[in-house]
Length: 112
Image (cartoon, rainbow, N blue to C red; front, side, top):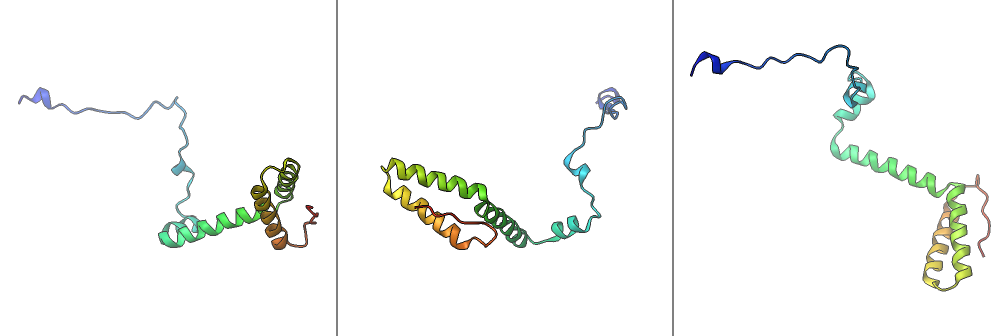
């Protein structure tokens, strides 16, 4: 082997004229207490917290007036079509469950 074949490759950083593209890890403050707590949390515990957050979001959707209106429209459409009694029964059971679990802040309207 000659000394000419063992030359190393020299790389240089990009010229300063190119803008720095922000990456995900550039936005994380490693000294943030919330980040440290989440990073040190066990995977099982983290999964439990994620499930709790998902349940909160689902509950918010189920209790929202917009969801209730959409459900009532679906039930009314099924009642007018009348060709799928099992689908109508399922929708009515969902509506009954939501109305039973809703709190007093939202008015409930009769479906039948």
